[in-house]
Amino acid sequence: MKNILLLLVSTLMTILVLEFSFRGVLHYTNFIHPNTKVALGVVDTNLPSDNPHAYAEMPNMTVPSESLGWKLKPGKYTLPFKFEGKNHPIISTVLEDGSRITRESSSSKSIAFIGGSVTFGYGVGDKENFPALVSEKVEDKVFNLGVQAYSTVQSMLSLKEFFKDKQKPSVIIYGLGSFHGERNNLSYSWRRALRSEDDTLKLPYAKYEKEFEIVSATSIRSNLASGSLLLDWLQMKLTNSFDQEVKVTEGVLLELKRLANEWNSRLLIAVIDKGPTPYEAFLSKEGFDYVKAIENYESLPWDFHPGHEFHKDLSEKILMKLQTLKEESK
Image (tube, rainbow, N blue to C red; front, side, top):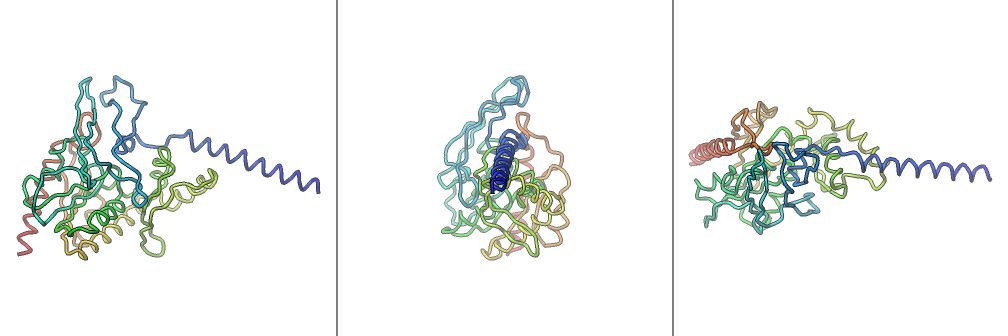
């Protein structure tokens, strides 16, 4: 009996030592990519002051959301970017409804832009992002619902929430990037990146097992550190594949298309990749209307996000496509 008791105590002590060791690994290892830090508004204190991309502390523009993970917080924010020792403050205004400010319109018809930080226009001013530029040229009310670091899944669900009790938009425009794939299936690397900043997050995601499925907000960690490491290993085996990310993203795009049809809205995909996109053949095959951003565009000098040329070019392409769609519907 004494030997059994000693064995149990020894086993328990071993488990406790391993658990605290795992917690140390999870706590002290920073897996988040610097670009993700910027997108989430997290300060990167590792940049030296003489780095040309160094910036001062960014304002916190988001609040937690039980269904989406996070959402924009209303307010007028000054983003204090710096380049070559000079300040380049950028104003970003988030309205009470959670959308970024665009030109006011009394029209009953609307155009909804959804996507991540590129659609939001992170790094450019309130009147310089492509949704705002489009709003200056159309009569319809334009809603910029882009949110930093959002996946296609989060974008679609936020669209549903936003228009739940509103007249549905006549057009939905989604800013698609190939890097959204790892967010859509909550890949190993993306979950680890987010967890290193906030391990209380619960995120919706999509998966393909026997069939396509969108999973409601799910914790990105286990209560036990050892459980989190086990989940990491399983997640790496199941989702750490670019082909899987593409497959899942294609499934979400089809869901978005079905939603647009249900709402009697036109869906337009704005491809924001800097080079060739892995989704072009799929978009053509499935009959999506889409436009592509200028390839090899220049990023902002003080940030990795696309610059003014990109936003101007994409807004012009979207306006041309909207005109074509309008003529086709007559």
